[in-house]
Length: 185
Image 1 (cartoon, one colour):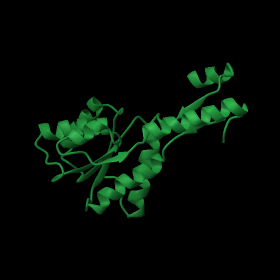
Image 2 (cartoon, rainbow, N blue to C red):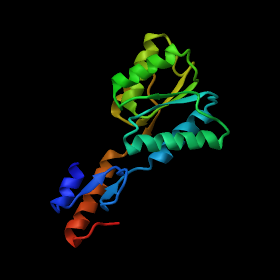
Image 3 (cartoon, rainbow, N blue to C red):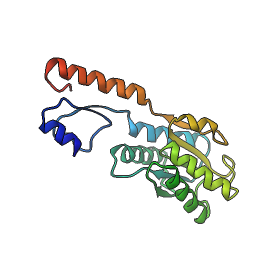
């Protein structure tokens, strides 16, 4: 992959996002996606949701897996289990497809963590098309805090993903590596 090629060429490298395995010892900055998943589940539980589902991101991405893991852990901490798991690719069309599946399955949830805002907008598209009341019938929590979420109807509740700060932290790690010649820990 790109990272391996950069390392083989001895190009100083940092990542935004945690790699699946860090055997090459690459410096990276990342947010706590497990905590984000926990916060999303907790928000839905605090709002009284009893049947909580998730639309995951692509499970070949560590961030998507971590959000799912955190969400499951928080449900378990409250003696709850998943009321539905649907999968998407962090895009609006895959969110809409997941929303259509939720409707087809008879709305088995009253709370739904959609692990990216773009997918959440797609879920809202599907729900609106089928007359599903949000937040009356199903409450949603997204992830990323993209600006479009504020324009959704209703405005999207979301977990913040501080991408600018993560990029700045990765740049700082790269500068440290360039100055010292060593990979920061």
